Length: 293
Image 1 (cartoon, one colour):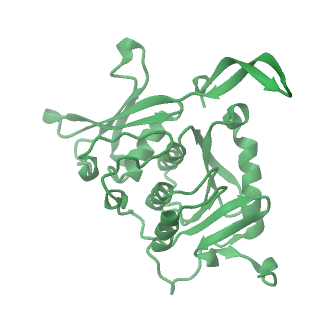
Image 2 (tube, one colour; image 1 turned 90 degrees about the vertical axis):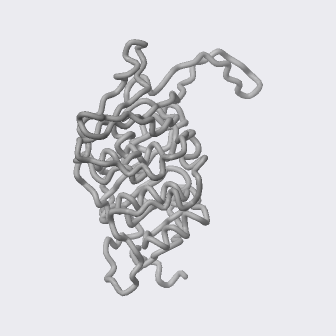
Image 3 (cartoon, one colour; image 1 turned 180 degrees about the vertical axis):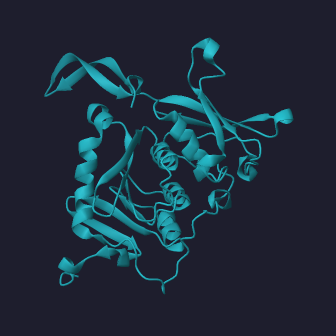
């Protein structure tokens, strides 16, 4: 993350009935407007797609991940260029990003007839309906109980993931104000980590980075969320082909329903050497615990 992801502020710190002047580190929150350029050379169009409140840094990955998880683009190869701050350069602002598609690409703008506005706390606020965010994934995770179990993970590996994540959350350690999404392999090796003031932005940045690295589908990986597991985060994970999601916090009821529908193993309350399995438990190896439940 860049230096402008953190700002420092003079505060009065109160401890045990005593007060003193101090400096506090805060995570920066600024708007990012995502614009999409598309169409033939003789008739290029520019459309405002989203305004999201985010922590500066990895903005190109954020835009790419957002366009992919919303189903507007299908793969990274559809992108011609990504330019940051181009439109507002004269005003010395870098909060506008322009994603230009190749001329032959026709984006799926069916779900953008409304004006996207995304806050840092909710990635699906003002969505027209549930159906508008049930974007069809390019990767078929539909439930089939007759298929062999793949990507089985040992429970001990899962329990180690929050400790690994905490050790790599540099900005969170300074500010205490960022969410994180992390990608691990089946042995618990950390592959990618992205932080943001918005939990949905952190995941879009992560998926955008994976797209750039040609890693999709992510069906042999573990997604770890530093907070709760909401419907929107499960939906984004499904779009990337992820079949195992672990959250430090609680899942919502709709997140569980969606995970079950798309054959995703969903784990919640992963902390302090414990966790709950909500869906598709066969992917978790529990041999050492077989006599305890």
